[in-house]
Length: 593
Image (cartoon, rainbow, N blue to C red; front, side, top):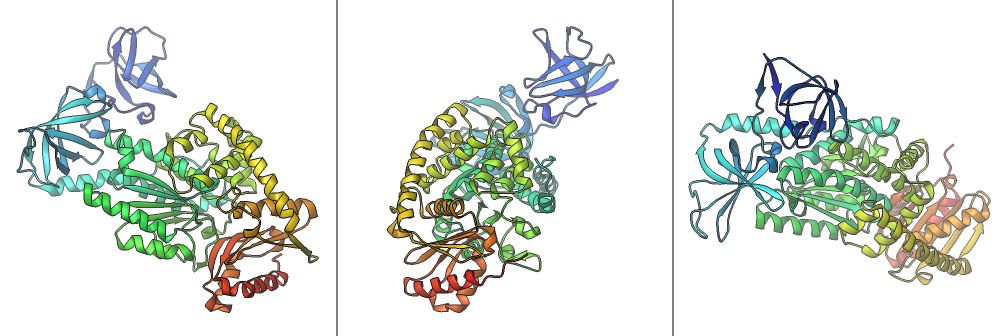
């Protein structure tokens, strides 16, 4: 007699292994492993009853080719786990050992949140309107619960019929820890491209993927903070498309995504203190109201610089976990970044000798696949992020090829990246999950219409802006490169598109085309300078800022960015000193061979 498995109702083809034996049940002339998986017999024999089969081939999205087994069999019942329950189980009564994670008294029944190490399930018990049922039960009690499963609207819940307290908690807690560790493991996938830098970053990438999966299993709210530009949004949306399905699966409730996940853009290219305060305020309120754990904060396209330190250190005081996915220049000493001592995990290509050309959006997309191998509609995102941040090199070209296979050509990716920057400019701090989801291709028809709509407006505004700047810009040919300076506040409309950074980039590109040589562009304001430079100029904005702090300690100097694209901030009183230092510095900058 052979022993065969019964595939759980919540599982699909990705949970199967070739060569394993399963019971296939017969219905309406077809065989199924469960409602999600259709069986096709290799022999093409017409089935007539339930039969054991051996999985021979997996055919996405929902078919397996199998060989019929004629031996006598017995079914191995899998242990009941919340994660495997589905609407098919409604009406069944099950017994599960679990922990009470929360108790909430409504005006009707008492609501219990139960956790068995794989997922949570809501259970209710009624002993009178507004009257506490089973008052002897307390939060964190371990019980053997007898539950009647019920379908309610679009989620599964249960009725707590009876229970027995488990006195020896150690065995269950040990099992719970083991299950959490198992479910937190990164999925086994390969990188989307061949990349030496990504391979070097892999241990760090796996650590972040594990931290995010663990947060979902532990029901730790996730706050995703990202830079409000195309690269930042790209990384955030890729992660979002991996995280939200797992949250819904874990809680068996579509609404859980709005309670356990929040995404917020930030205008500053670092974890701004005001954003830190907003995140902590939100988190502390939720903890007080709903007894949530401290959050996991994910920083995308920022988090690696000295400017991030204050915010990072503050959230750590309140017990939050924090991970960083970034590609901005970071000062490294003895193989560690200045922020590493305060982070739970950190991925940045500079940590392994790479550079900005592998962007945060690219890295986040790779991490998304280690979080959730079933994540979809993200293969174009790394190339999009690259166009948004002007990436170059073989890694970028490989991602472009991948995007083209997904139906995105180069011209559309470039137009899409500009549309995202345009939308981000006006969204400011708003999450706008539905709108950004459509712009990122959840609805391809609407995506194309939005890009077409924005394209004409973007081109018109850019043309007007460039015409203004061309009239007033001051250009000096220094031989090795062209130096261009403009009083940017006098040439742009505050709050309108393009922003100072975009206007500077637009001007810089025009000058490179016009002079066909290296260019350094300085957009000068009363208390900041925005810098753009071609690589041949050889500057590093971050080093200049570091030296300015020493040279002009009374100037309240700050700022950062990439080596050849960033901003320097200062008090207005030292503007002329800063400008003089920057000009002298770049004129005498020694270019690395």
